[in-house]
Image 1 (cartoon, rainbow, N blue to C red):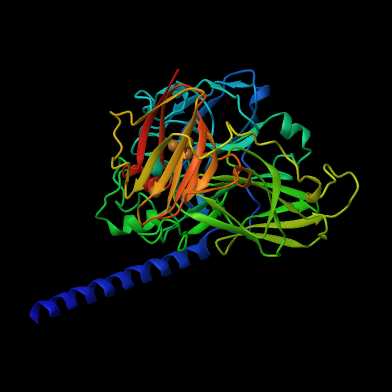
Image 2: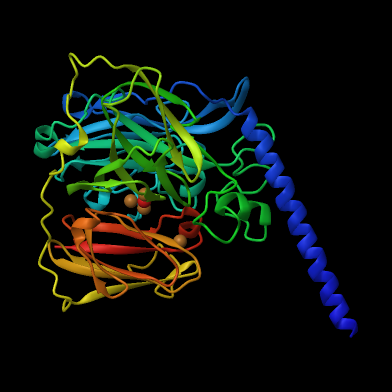
Length: 494
Ligand code: C2O
Ligand code: CU
Ligand code: CU
């Protein structure tokens, strides 16, 4: 009897404690949201056209300040001292690009090219010498041999990936090819072809990014597991990393910015650059979303949707047809119920339009050619996702967990047996989804992928070919999971 009372008492105090903590956090976040600068013009990172560079480009990783709250400087990280995030690089299939990373931080970092098929030495992750220490630099040798896509770059040094990405180190890459040339899509960068990096953030009472503050994170970026506040900030509600509730969704570093546009078709290149979470994207005007590209390439046919989902690490290119709008009309992009961007129509003249088409003129994009016809008979490498581990193992920099041969076809089965959702991402890969939960699916419905969101208890099988040799990582793109060990190394051999 006595022990029951004690248990009951403990239970009550835990519940009360949790309610108070969550309540305080909720109020704090709400109060903070009001202070965050909003309704400013969407920030468009500068576009660097790699094809026309005649010198190697230096990408610096810098400690910078950013005013999320007017008049209050927050310590963040950015590339090329941009203030937050990094420049957008535009490349063409066939280009070579030899960027030099200069590390001006006080901890190691790397550059990883998420979605790029590249050699292991330049992938910026699994090679033992991938880390670039403070004050040092490294040259990456990138040969762009893949199809048009929206990919991105971010740091990938063991132990600091999550905190550096959270503090602002990320940028977009646009790859063009013969299809993107011929499709006549909106392609005026920053005008009708708009990069949109969506990130779920939390701010403390001073407008600082609530990650790595107040001793929640050690200097190494490794999380203190016993620190509940740290868990909450990093993972949403501490258990379900799929949600962004309680977080503020920022667009290119700003809160509900606006973009003035013409009444034409607008292309948005969406990147979910959050450390965790899936976002449900729609418009507040019930204007349709036309999905034209997934992570690493065009769909074969555009898909018209009322809403779409984008998980951490994923990209989608979408078109929104504003041709019937009038001056003064506004269309809000909504992510998980929050306004994230207001498109304000400020010009509805119909002469001298750059791309005078409507979305129903572009249903055919680029062919999706599978590596081989899928029969369901092929051999398969399995990746069992459990809490903080893959195939029963936690990450070790001393092991090579899988070996593949270059230019051979493989099937990877990603089997989530845990009670959480995960976002599986192998480097150096463009894959196609062939089965979900044991049922064959049409890969053309999902397009070219490099990251796949697998909900608890589900499994997904993909067809892949690795075209470059070297050492690479596969991991969960919920970055706190990755840092707690949900990552492995693989080698691609000749
Ligand atoms: Cu976004 Cu290991 O990558
Ligand atoms: Cu990657
Ligand atoms: Cu995960």
